[in-house]
Length: 291
Image (cartoon, rainbow, N blue to C red):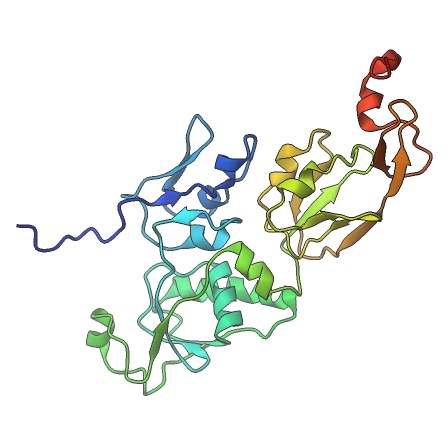
């Protein structure tokens, strides 16, 4: 009889149905593959994301970088903290910057108790985090020597036992939640070429975050809500939209006009009142649509 198993991962680990590569045919999203430190994610010939569960170390980098929270079978790491600081024992793999940002926002963490020469990967992670925090105008993190409360001997560290008074917790993963918490700076920005855009509205309909919106008088591009999934770029017929990493973007509100096509007599939206034909009629030369 099998008493226990050393395999603690779920039976299924990978990009689930919500993955943009499963919902948008020409999606170019590869966020999970790009950040995975072990190369566990691979792109199949059919354009789907697959994961090798034996290569996955459960670091959670994919969780915190997926634009639509599609990764399944992986949970964010449980970490030890006390007051406003993270304390040992630490994981061998340091958390990604995106996870540390959530510790900064959700738990108010500002310090890490450690000796810099004992966990160099964590030291580098905090340094990278501080670069991002400086761009955001947020308080920086500091590394401080372990307090007497933390210094309980190497055996507790080896056994991964937390010290008395320490708490254990995890943060909420995903770009979507991070964008809702950290609204003072954008991470991605939808860029529009108005000369190519025909205002078909496909981008607004496919955007799961409502970062692109239409109303009767304007088109809104909101980089604060954008998670960089690239859905809008994938469905844009005129190749007028692109998504760029940009942490200094501001919301853009572009004025649009209500117009009536001089060929088919249908109402449509246009950039200027001077336009006299809708996008469909402009594609039909020699008045074919009118006939």
